[in-house]
Length: 123
Length: 109
Image 1 (cartoon, each protein chain N blue to C red):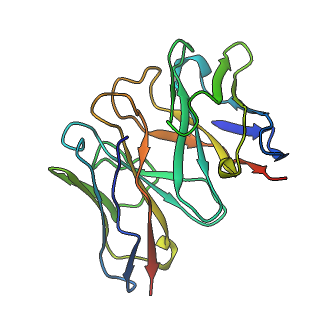
Image 2 (tube, chains in turn red, cyan; image 1 turned 90 degrees about the horizontal axis):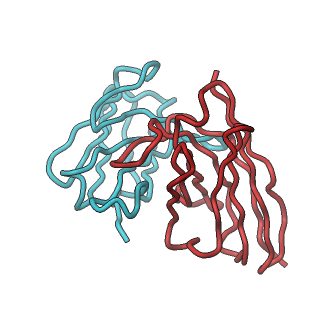
């Protein structure tokens, strides 16, 4: 059974940093691209970042480029999102999700999602 | 940036057919995917590659594509189908590999 468990969320002040983790199990982690998707309170889904299965390719939404860094440790089956220079508008539930391929060459879906971790940016 | 456009809301009575559209310039070149999200829950993939249905998804869910618009159709809507629905695709250049539509709230009257 595929499981994705996010952790690391919490309350942080504007300008602060936070690192999210996503522990994966139930599939060959290194074979699949992974993504972070967020959802602000009462709002829709917003794709944040993604990384190929090997970790060699990374992708970012314009809204987080230069502030967030995605990475993965395939030996630990864990995905990370380092978030720096946090802003109030980064407040959201952050979901970790598994893609259906290891590389991103065309539109592919996210077939498994974690339950999310809440990040609140406020003074 | 690239955008996918959905209607904010759709309302239908039980047993009727609901149609939710999603428009985007790259949709003739990129597959579209649909997710269902109920309050407090993570999204669930209900349609992939425009019209394919994952295992476990009821047959009343179907998808279609025509030009720059894709459509999620729910036939014989049930009360349990009330949820937010999101389309997802990518831009044609690969710069934005995941793009979500703004979401459509399906209300079962």
